[in-house]
Length: 60
Image (cartoon, rainbow, N blue to C red; front, side, top):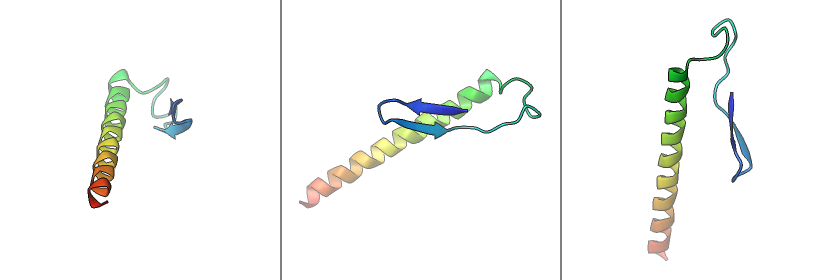
């Protein structure tokens, strides 16, 4: 499974699973947990990037 970020023109691998593990696909609950974790990680990265840019501006 993968996510497509059209704004950044990126494709991000999210999960590799086999049909032995999941006959059709992972449950909605499992998918929601993974997507929530990805969203949180992106928000954390965005926050870190903003903090880094702010500290660079202060040093100038």
